[in-house]
Image (cartoon, rainbow, N blue to C red; front, side, top):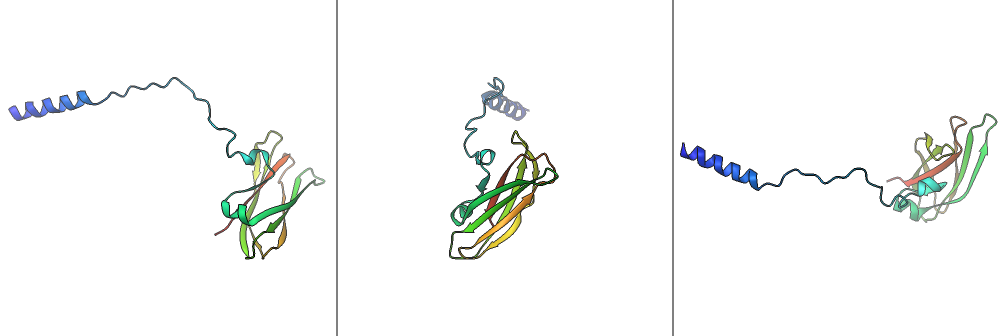
Amino acid sequence: MNIRLLNSGIVALALGLLPGCATHDTGAYVAQNGSVNNLEDNSKFVLLNQRAQYSVTCGSLQEARLPDGRLQVHANLRNREDRRIQIQVNCVFKDAQGFAVEDTPFQNVFLDENAQQDVSFSSANDKAQRYTIRVREAR
């Protein structure tokens, strides 16, 4: 019986020494560094990884409206290296405020040594006003 009392006393003492779960939250917080790593909101062409940044450039972008109002985009991609590379390219079509209205699936593109190749994307509807072409190097 004394052992139970002693154990109960130790447990009570240990619980008394633990800090409480008091929180000092005061409400909502402002987002920090909202403009850091935010290229996709303002650029028409972005490279998603370091390997693509080293290997790929975009010589020109061309955009046009199709007769039905859809946006069509062409990008001239160039391999800067002396080796054949595989990249993946997609396009995010956005409305006038910059919200995505369509995200195309990534398509594989093989670029020979120092070669150039065009890729094309067409939006599915006439809501697209802006776009961002995204490139990543496949592994």
